[in-house]
Image 1 (cartoon, rainbow, N blue to C red):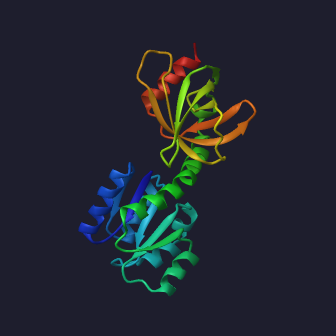
Image 2: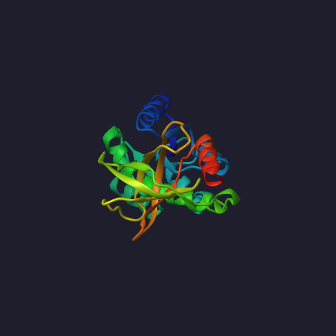
Image 3: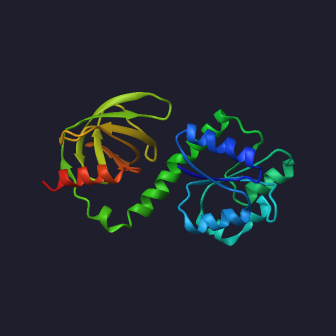
Length: 229
């Protein structure tokens, strides 16, 4: 996910950036609430990690800004000195969670694992508005598919159909709608395997339909060529 860390202490911010990279996310860093607002207006963010104690606008001030509330990006507030009343105020103002500093990497991973399926769902809805995605054609294709869940468990399935925007997979294991999982499969073009984070959008008797979230441009073109044969 694209994670913006709002932290005025450089050394603390760099620790967050390193931890997020280690967890497989795409971090960026803002030193103030004002800088964070600028990034929110120009970038597509999936989550904001917000320190309450900032120069200029505070974290609580940031949560109350109209552009922040309108964007709907999940915010995780954090502080090393916040009181219980401040924590409650953060949640009242729309923060998804509040954590004390320092934040352990395991705790950070838990929070982001909870947020990620919802962030992927937001990204899916935005991508569905694009003309290329709407025109994506599905073709019948039986391909071995490995599905990896967040807890590390893996299971095998077989694709029913595939398109540049998603794939339907038939397997004995059933997931809940809205769950994110990693799909790994090899298209019949002789190229390398496709490894893509996906979101389960629906399930029926024929299989489970996944939407590709972070498919690379190269793999999108490969699957588009496959569907146009």
